[in-house]
Amino acid sequence: MKIVKIKAAGLRGCTPEGGWANEIKPQDCVHTLVAVFTDEGITGWGSVFTNDGLVQAALQVLEPLYVGENPQEPERVSEKLHANTFWMGRGGTITHTISGIDIAMWDILGKTTGQPVGRLLGGCYRNRVLPYASLLMRKPGALAEHLIAIREQGFRAFKIGWGPFGRQSDAMDEQIVRAAREAVGSEALLMVDAGGSDAFWHRSFKWAVRTARMLADFGVYWFEEPLPPDNLSNYVLLRQNSPLPIAGGEVLTRRQSFVPWLQGRALDIVQPDVTKVGGISEERRIAWMAEENGIRFIPHGWNTAVGLAADLHLASASRDTDMVEYLTGSPFIDDIVENKWQLDDNGMLVVPNGPGLGISLNLDAVEKYTGQRFSSS
Image 1 (cartoon, rainbow, N blue to C red):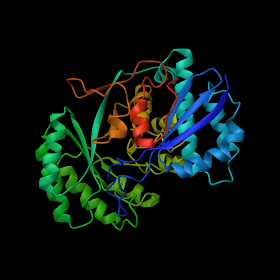
Image 2: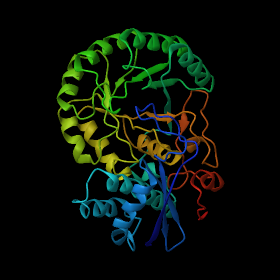
Image 3: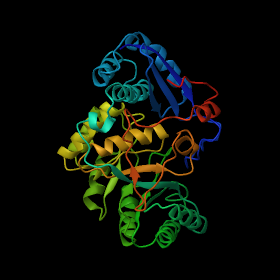
Image 4: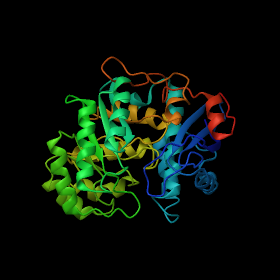
């Protein structure tokens, strides 16, 4: 089997708010679908957390390296793409694009062998995973209403992030968390994401320590990105002084970037994003490193249905990973699949057990959001 071409198309029209300082708009593209076509008519799907213009440019650079390659060997081919683009900005657009290609190759490998990706990764520890509903923070009243509506959909775990948190006052932060806890109830898991990877995040180590103690009073499960994402030394100190787990790592790419964070014990929970870190091949190596260093691996999943499917398979094949992020209200997750995601009575998601990623894309919806028509093969 050989790769004959790769096609990419950006998702637009319903891009959800990110809470960023320079807020994204519905027509902005931050997620790009990738289709890897083979000479045997089998197509694999991937997803990239990057603007489609950048992905298209990266594909032009990578084309001489992937055309004619065997997509049934995703780890080797992905490593070839990494190794031959070492001088072109490793960790940036090219690495993000390789992520989508790698996910698509694992999808192809599963389709050609008739096995789900999780089994190909070494075996499945679980067939259901707890999704946590991920949504933006708002003022306390509006946030509580939103959380109650999400809870009524069956979710049992919730992450609130960005918005006014850490951007107005300590009093507002506490009001937001109090309202959230009252809305979801005492038994639900509640996580807080400060959004420290926002542009020019200004909050300090001491703010993070004080805030962590406040969050612990409300039974918050973890505190995510409370500091700028490059401040390794302060993350180490924060983790040592925080009464609740510290999570982060979504902006890091390539397994090598995670080594000092994992070996330095800077995080309790590491959150690589499969659509930018280098794909499934790279993320599972990070998951192994995390386990070896006593750190929990829970994927970052603010992306697409393809990314969610990859996360579910990674979670199924990782011994201690029983949660995935579910971006609520995004048609790029909810609408582009043929079979809608369904929570069971316990608020769990079933890991797709069909060949490859185990999902079928709704190509009419894909065309609606990308403006391009893909083959159904």
